[in-house]
Image: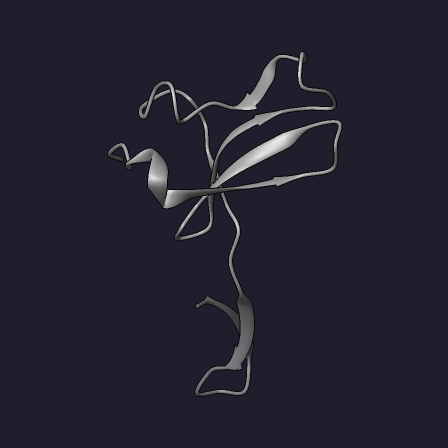
Length: 73
């Protein structure tokens, strides 16, 4: 995982906490449940051990034998 420029991030928050979300849906920074809480996701500080989460669409497709399988889009 590499670092992205800060201009590739947007913020999502509720006046108590805020998350930095990358252009491809990665949540790279989040302190929860308040701004002064410890970070839950900290990939912005350390790309290898600072865990991140990905937010994306999840679609269900049917396989060749009719079984359902999840596909990230």
